[in-house]
Image 1: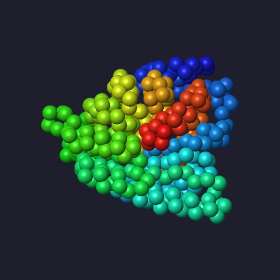
Image 2: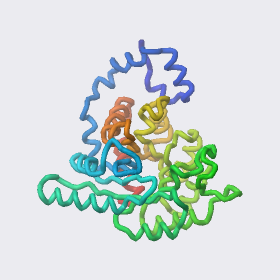
Image 3: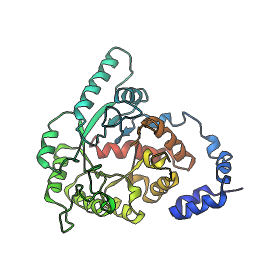
Image 4: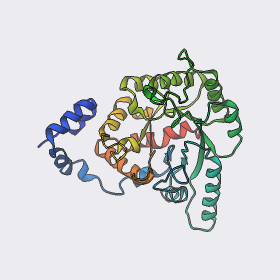
Length: 322
């Protein structure tokens, strides 16, 4: 059965689900014999890790068990020649841990046990409160490169956590504290992540970030419509394309990898950042997940140049590394 796999990137998620139901196992057979995928092999993605940046890894120590730990991840990233990683912690600032890990890597380099050391950065996530004073103090620490809006404690899409934090006031206007935090991010040259905000909050945040000159990445874009994502990209926000939303797993068995690839292709690689968001206990380690995603992208006609834009250039700009 001949299947035009590339056309699936331009169908809606509903259309793809109907296609999968209609062809059944023929979809797997088609990919097994696909000419593009016959040229893909484990390790083809190695060169794409050189100078790459992961802006969203979850690793241990954390509030929950993870499939990878920060020391192992940082060593593996160093061996692959990655440029930087920026830790994601939902509840506690991670820049002090990042500094300590970076010192350990430098020690390993000095002993000749590592060829080079990846830069290790940390973050502060505003899950306790949206407080500029707290951010000001966090920015005094070394190795901080990201301020993240509320995530697990956010009100979230469809107000699924009614008592959670929101960047809106009662009139659905952005509270002044958010603007102050965006301005602080520009002064300190650190990136901003949207956390787990609603579509309406993300759009408003993207507009305000543009006005302030802040550099913003939107989390979990599959919670938003394609038109909403394009609107945010037009305002200069980066769209996060993460392994966690790409790979089906026990946490999200209904996830369709082609939805992520479709968003990337239709929004445009110049507006996208690839990252892991992986290492949930029952998920691959960050680099393992990234390898699978990169191979799939190569098989679906993303060029190495496009991937380098999303995995190297754009995250470097987000973190003010260039």
